[in-house]
Length: 347
Image (cartoon, rainbow, N blue to C red; front, side, top):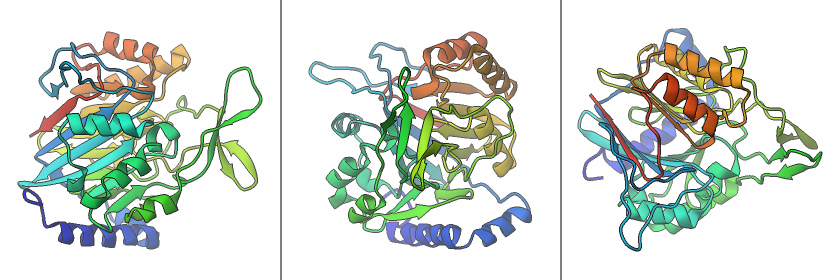
């Protein structure tokens, strides 16, 4: 890597670290018991939204955004899915990862090309949870970039990322099969699957949350979402779902979620606890408030507002009503996300 640490050195470090978290949870617990682990500060983090539910070619830029503008014959693909590409800069060294893969690999790959990104520069790949609108594009996207991806690059997941999941749709008692990502398909591409339960740095400055604790009384997982454990589906508690967090030097935490099934307030509070940092620079991602009751939306918006983030950027499964509520209550901090947007947070 021209502008980052030596790839071989980084991959060796990543795999050793991953192995420790997979095989040595006692060690991780001991570290946590001794005090909050130091979270590496980043000088700069850039996040590209590779796909999301909404695209608007004419939406103006803000201080931290650069949006993709259509030209004749080219436009960004939007879908009911979510995918990110991220670069961090720590002490002048750049590292990169992909986080979630969207639903339609053709559309996501087209967006990657239009945004001028090279997945061969990624030091790690990662997945928030095992729902098809986050994993469905993974195998095709990674296979089509296989020649540029270094053998043994880690693919980080939380618990039950490879489980089969279902959804009870309105008006029916039959659970719809949501499919599953297969571990062997990821490994066949030459990636090293690393399952984590505890906070884990996946690239310098970017950290998986580990399993997120629940502290709010109102953020409950809808009973219509199911997971297969044993012989039949049962309610999914998403205890293995992962979010990412970073500490931007002099600015505070950037918290990036996939769907936040365990609650976006729970997610942010967990990141604050793990990092030992209260200041929130940005909360970004799917907040899973779509079709939520008005009181749940009000409570969520109030609790996020009380954290005083500099930016609030709802995406994907946040839902129209919740997006409007954030815009109304936090107009100065609110940014409407559009697919293809590049976000830059820096010291």
